[in-house]
Length: 241
Length: 156
Image (cartoon, rainbow over all chains, first blue to last red; front, side, top):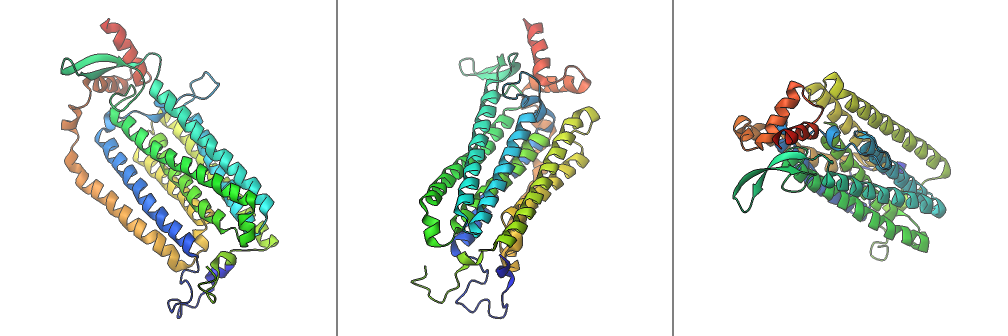
């Protein structure tokens, strides 16, 4: 930790050491995350573009995401707030697992990794639940102009929920971007849970204890925090603004 | 690794720290967590107050939310992902290319995006939707689905 600042800048690039004072695996994880962050950055920028283009017909998130499990009440954005809390919490448990790894404390690594996996799985489940309600829509539905294949013209039709072509709540582009960006992020969370689980099994088996260091926890931790980082932006641009 | 590079420093072991250092680190991490939780709750409170107070869609609100998001992102990257404690040069290797590319992307969208226009595109959007939005702006109904339901009744 504190060693990382001790570097002789004159000989940093002379070879025999990393000028970054960082292992190969960790550095490559960072480079992968930069490229992944550029992908998400591009997606969110294009979302912003389309949103401004259709600014006056763009649905407001507080009118769309109003459900909360087991409570039959109009609670806008409450559930997504909880989801955000769960993901930030699992980021904290992850970083505590990394910290325990630095002390070679196997027991604590197991405990914190376990809670990280629980948090991640809960988040993926919550997202599935939110998608379900978005696709099902409200009981009243909304009248929309829908393209008819037989008549080759637009017909007025009551639409329930959202899919790739029609959207009860507003322009279909909202649903397209919502499905694509939260889906892409959700797949990242899912992969993160799977990777965390594999590493968790390795910790249980004692692989890293034998190796003498728990750097693998740090590497998967970087990926896991990145997933949280992306969610912070998705949360702002889809739900708050 | 060690069989190939006997005199190579083992960076994997450098991150090890003692019990006391661990205590200090944990304290910092929990503090960062409370900051982030406070920011998120603040955002949700402001977000739920916005429609009633007429703040929705104002530039001030956008700047506030994006600013707080970047602050949260800074906490995650610097504290949780530990970038704040890496060598200064590595910090720049990670952050500078990203900031340049994203800055350019945002610039090009803001600059060239004006060609997409506003008025002529509205005609391509569902006319019912435009009508509903105009009704909403005029103050009829609470949100689009409800207004649409009344309209459906009127048609039948």
